[in-house]
Length: 292
Image (cartoon, rainbow, N blue to C red; front, side, top):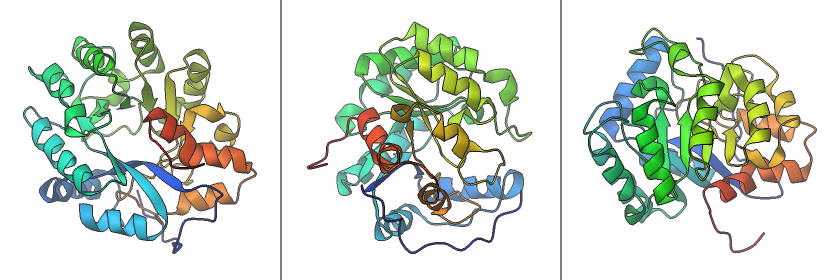
């Protein structure tokens, strides 16, 4: 896919409440380099090839108040290294809410999850496509059980899209709304966020949110127009207290603030924008504010 040559703003729009970006990726330098090579070959050229310190400085200097930092392990024995990296980051920078990860099916997955809170991490990020697992598989259920026990929310890329021949398995064979609903029924105390509105199954996920109070969505990349579809219209008719804003920074093919500017130009009320850009993420990750 071709990147967009759109202009970028110098600061976040003048919303009435500070912005929390609930979907930012951080990795050690070698992992970022490999990830960007993958995007170049199979996705799109990444516009912001910034390492972790630089990408955080970029966002904070432009008015983003907090970021939820995500990563994922694509092979066994990688999760512990990534989680240590994230724990060191959040210890240095209180504006970062770090999530841990684990590879479903690795022998010590429950043990890894049990130690995340002690490391200062606030949840778990999983990616069905990259990690080659179905949401309702036995390996995934083992992870969800551990997360429910540890009271850790899960950000789960379980939408079918994007489909890519570069993945080890067809994402359409792994992912479906019905499979995520099985997770919600099996783990009634688990808080779960499906990013990207669930992509091509967005309408079905909006319906699922109405049935399950512990299911959330994030809007990451879907308000940009890059993939087509009127996701702003879907946002307007979605449950306001269940959708949070995320950017997917730095792995973007367009300006960092493209979606925020789309939100600012929309007909959404100030109250609805506050929910999207801060309040829902604060509730999902149990974040505190001194005021507001």
